[in-house]
Image (cartoon, rainbow, N blue to C red):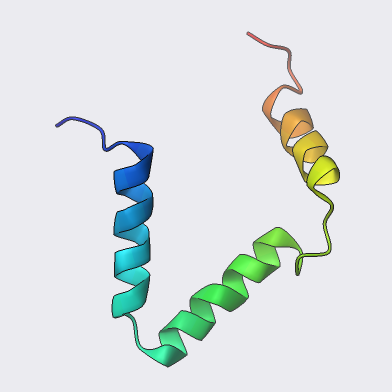
Length: 60
């Protein structure tokens, strides 16, 4: 099976989200806010944390 392009993947996620009930959409949004830190996390800090986690053992 061929992997979906990023655009197709994003579009399928958005379509699936739109099919959810309002209550389920709120639950998903609340979970995403928890992951993103309520929008208070600066982009640079997020990138630094992600880089640290991804490459903590080097680039290999």
